[in-house]
Image 1 (cartoon, chains in turn green, brown):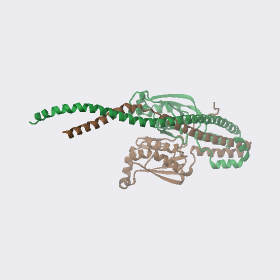
Image 2 (cartoon, rainbow over the protein chains, first blue to last red):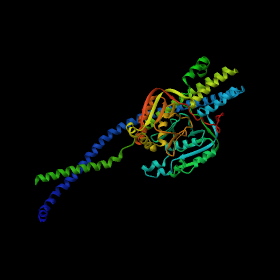
Image 3 (cartoon, chains in turn purple, brown):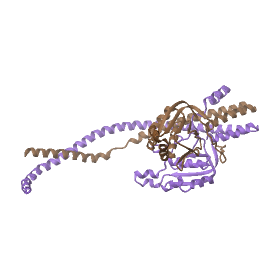
Image 4 (tube, rainbow over the protein chains, first blue to last red):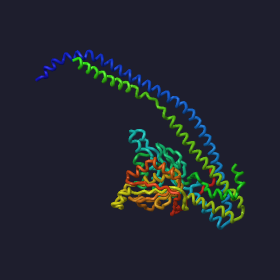
Length: 274
Length: 245
């Protein structure tokens, strides 16, 4: 009942207000944009400056670190060569010592076996090579589904466990031999084997009865089947002769053994190590 | 009337001010450059150098050990007793490394069980319920976290973990080295207790176990005895690689 009356009275007022306020609206909109730009500019330039200095500093240290890394890698490579030479030398000596039959021969055989179990010497033999790689779909699917199409550390653990259960005697992942204190870990986006970074494709080499290993890994419903279901790239190949490196791990020389040896050949060793 | 107009103007003033700011921020929000990678690179490089340093030390130790062994053999020359003496000691060392001997040292004992208050009512049921939910991967990630942080020997319920040890779930039971294990678990670890504990705490392992319904109670010990491996690996297919090329 009252509404038409109100509208009649209100209409001219609205129009009048609009004239002034449209202008105001634009002015204030502009003012707002100006303030925000100004604020952003000030904070951004401050941030950028600090980032830039940090960045410059980073480039220098980065180069330094890179050089350091290369140097120590080269040193390690030389040491590795030296070690493998020494290993073959002692192995030859031990073998030649087996001319003394009886206890020494038996001891030598046992020693070689135990060393292989401790993964302290490189080994060779027939076996199976499994290569796992992320699915090509990982690049196309939306990021939240991406995880499903990548090889995870859990998958590697499962494959390794199944291989050992099927009778594998020695396993290496991307050239990292698995030993008694090996670990497979996932830190952030990277997988570490024995504390060393490895990246896909993962090449799992296993020495053992290759036929048995192959059938065991091919069992329907096995881990490889599951991985194939997720469209991961899985390939498997029997190999007649695999070569796996030794695992080098810390704390190899037990203190008491060191002392004993030091007592026995005090000076001769010292001159040799120099 | 005038007051109302003033109010209306003020309202428009604020609304448009905010709208303007929003617009401006919208324009600039994607202009931020990404410089984060360089820092990651440096951390990455530092880690790599750390790794190589460690490897350096390990290699030096190893070389030293072999040099000693070699000179010991040389000294023993043709004396059979001396040779077998050296070899025997070397064998003992290899057995220790392979986990074929029991080991003693400072470390940790992790007691893994359902929380105490659940045990009071019906311990068997409480454990059984949780045990079903536990996966082999959970136990494996725990073990790998320990080894990855310098554990020298680990056993689960007296099953020593060696090179070819497996932890696997076979039809609802967790098997370690093909032997089924039941709750409560006792994980014995030789290593730096503080380091291991710190590493465990920052990892998501306690969280995962808690979600399943298991509590990990660590106990630091001066002497932990880890038993030797029971099932010794049969070696038929691998041989020592003599010529390294």
